[in-house]
Length: 88
Image (tube, rainbow, N blue to C red; front, side):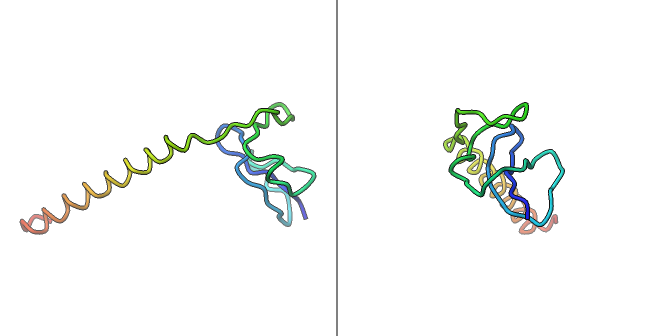
């Protein structure tokens, strides 16, 4: 078994998992132990883990989520209107 840290697009650890074999996709790094608290939100650069933690911007995440929901709702409203008017 191999223990891996999962990295996001900024090379920040967002997860730890144990798998049968190495995942060589540039977004996983082998680590010594299954310890999310140790690796979580630390950046992996040049073979080293940062001391600093890069916590997610929860306000921005929530704003992005709300914008997607509003766009989806507007798209659905438009489709319903087209159906009601016989144009879909």
